[in-house]
Length: 224
Image 1 (cartoon, rainbow, N blue to C red):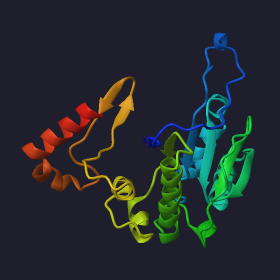
Image 2: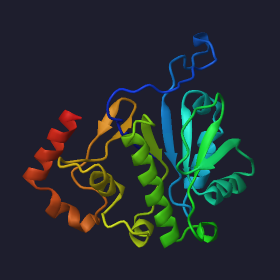
Image 3: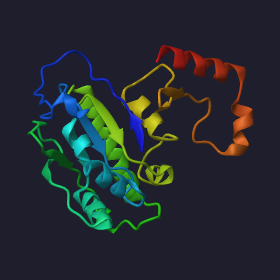
Image 4: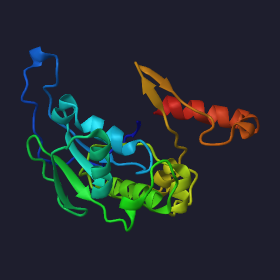
């Protein structure tokens, strides 16, 4: 699962809830953040990963979770895993009001999304990914969520669905009108992994490893 953090502008007041568990349990005891969860491509492993994530009590209890996507895709994950997840469905433009112990699902209407086949690219799947990201970015920009987590996307499906950029990062840079470099960072066990190239064919990598690009990537990592 890949992560993208989107800082919300300015300070704001928002309803928070706290973990009901005691700190002696080795679990969280902090003011909870509100996190948007974007479904990802319906033809891939996104529905299953989202189901597994929401089946984890520690995850559910340590954040106010807002799922963004088509109800049909959410149901696909339930079918794949053979169990139901308790969520509260609402319109895509509904106000985010955290309710203790509940996961909010903002329903994204996409024609034909329930018919997207598994393990195949599709314009509907790509449109679902793009529009889910767009709504998550809007919520971040408005200060309604503290961060964004998204399930895996399919780049080809996103292109078929209308994404004119190489990947979701390009879409994000355009949405937020960033003029500075941007990159994906992978973080595991305290180690950060930056990159000079991203989502390009291996045969193209050598020509892209220029001194300028390497220096730019190092500078971005240092500033992040």
